[in-house]
Image (cartoon, rainbow, N blue to C red; front, top):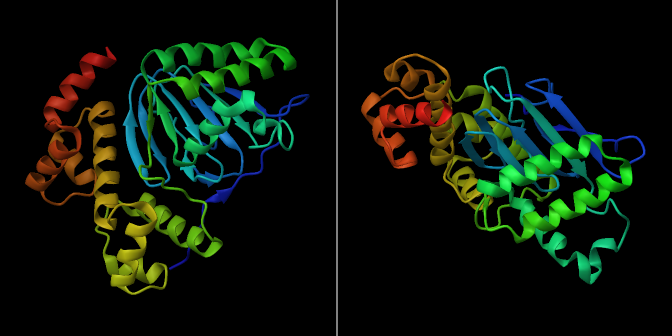
Length: 290
């Protein structure tokens, strides 16, 4: 089996700026579906819509837009596609030292320094923070460079003091590993992303990364704080959540399209994962999205 690592993305700052800023209309972000990473810290605001996201080993489904902070070298997939239904997507990317060596070491930057540290595991913001910061991010498009920089620092400070953030990869998960670890774990993530509809065995995944099955199981749990089986099931359940929201097909069809071959097991797993039955989840989501 061929190992396909996540794409390393080279990012150039916007002209006349120390960081990159870009706003995409609807699903125009052509890199959204790619599994990629970069040394830059990334702040993404998706205005409206709903979709699937994977950041490190965390997989989830968002509704009513998204506001995400992704740490340096944390692999992720983009958040929008033709099914998302968002108005636009704004992406800001900055190197951890984008204002020079030592700038974030000064006392006034303590909050932002703490935020960058937390972002190594990925953070999703919700509630009023998502709404208010989203507006500020979009207003940056019309600002001159200096004002845009001040707005950026203000946004980062507000995110750090917000109580409406959720760390996505719990227990200090970080993809800042040795290169061999990076290649291995990302090969596994890629394989699951491309094959979750099918039956995936421990044997084939262990072979993919040249490990024995017991060694692979211990390794995967150590790196991600999840068993491999749970990771695959979570991926399938989030895909099922996406289909429940976006496709007018039966729940039985959704079960099999998401890679489950046992309907009762799917129902049980979905309720454990979301706290709701699949039909209840679909009904409640429809009322939210109207």
